[in-house]
Amino acid sequence: AQRVTQPEKLLSVFKGAPVELKCNYSYSGSPELFWYVQYSRQRLQLLLRHISRESIKGFTADLNKGETSFHLKKPFAQEEDSAMYYCALLAGSSASKIIFGSGTRLSIRP
Amino acid sequence: EPEVTQTPSHQVTQMGQEVILRCVPISNHLYFYWYRQILGQKVEFLVSFYNNEISEKSEIFDDQFSVERPDGSNFTLKIRSTKLEDSAMYFCASSDGGYGEQFFGPGTRLTVL
Image 1 (spheres, each protein chain N blue to C red):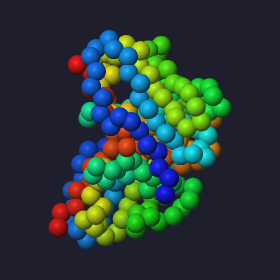
Image 2 (cartoon, helix red, strand yellow; image 1 turned 45 degrees about the vertical axis):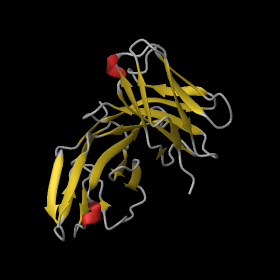
Image 3 (tube, rainbow over the protein chains, first blue to last red; image 1 turned 180 degrees about the vertical axis):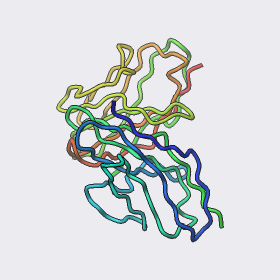
């Protein structure tokens, strides 16, 4: 079964503290994984994808096939990081759909 | 920067009525998608569309749903006879390739009374 699991509905950390948003996936093939972010009153937007191996806004995510995980990390949280974060998996017969996790709301306390 | 647009932002309808949700994808994109998010639940895939036909659809996308690209710019989702459980936020997305980044619209909130 193709599935993305985000175990935390809400994560609250202090500004300057490290952040780790957890994501596990289930996929039979070679996964292509993403993190999407939705800031308050804004649209869903791509934060990063594992194949690009970039760091965006200080966030990184490493694909661990052994643990089937793709956790999102940032060493020092900023207030503007407060948002809803969705881990997602590209799936379908011709990469034609995205399967989303249930999302984690990240709240950064000043 | 080009964006996906959706109209209306909020649609209220009576159960059993037909609704059409409209999307204008990014102009050079060829792949189009609809997703929905029921309040408090995850974003769910409904359908993907390429080359004027459905590429893939989920089990949610039953005979009550249809999609169309009536002209060169619009992409529509029609629900023939709405049910209470169709109340959700509906997101349109587009990409320039099957493996390309999907760009999402702001969503249409559908409320079925």
